[in-house]
Amino acid sequence: MPLVLRKSKNEKIMIIRNLILIAFFTTHLSFTQNGGKNFIDQPYIEVTGQIETEIIPNEIYLNITLNENDKKGKISIEQQENQIITVLKSLQIDIEKNFSILDFNGFYKRKFLADDKVTKKKRYQLIVNDGKTLGKIYQAIDRIDVSNIFITKTSHSNIEKIRRDTKLKALKAAKEKANDYAEAINQTIGKALFIKEVSNFSNNRFLANNANLLNEVVVVGYGSKSKQENIQDLNIKSIIITASVMAKFSLH
Image 1 (cartoon, rainbow, N blue to C red):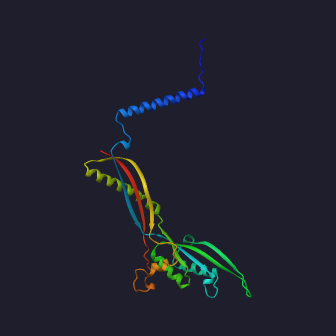
Image 2 (image 1 turned 90 degrees about the vertical axis):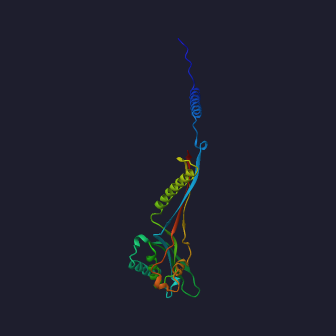
Image 3 (image 1 turned 120 degrees about the vertical axis):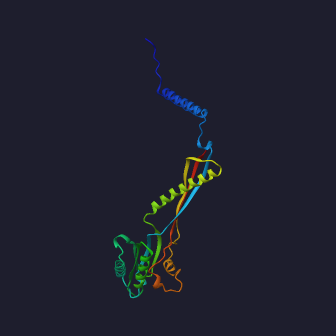
């Protein structure tokens, strides 16, 4: 009966590993001998395309703060809130969608030889969609003596799609630039070898968190005309979205 030598599990693994290495080096040697190259070993051109997209905001975020101490005659927070809601509804603002409470605080004040009192402070967020509506709201709220209102930020409801489209335009700009460079030296570009997004950001020209910002927007650019005449159509500054894409193309 012939003697059968059984190989251990570890020996079998080593044999398989060696076979894989032999196959890899054999393939690599054959590829090298046939003149194959990776992209860093062949002629290529590297360019960067950059595109700016300017958009008009259609989401303007307002911060409105109500404080009982700001009102002469001690008008309660609830009364002030009802006044604002009435004003917003008269301007066809969707209260359920665009008006919300950010926070609500009560401050207990102890007085000497007088009644103690609790002062309430409430902060809201209001979203409007254009400068004309913003002007009307500012004017209407000003009439009910609410002065603590300012813009926190501006945005666009479709901003993510606009960013994506801007990136694609930047890539196309990179390809056009590579084509132009290649033609200048009597060559052509081939397939893309490498693509990298360099940057993608929004430059909101509207300064945020400035309590006097809304008044500045109203006044700037209107000369000697009264604020009341021109506040109906405020010019909200645009948002600039910038995208840069680096690409490498083979040269022929």
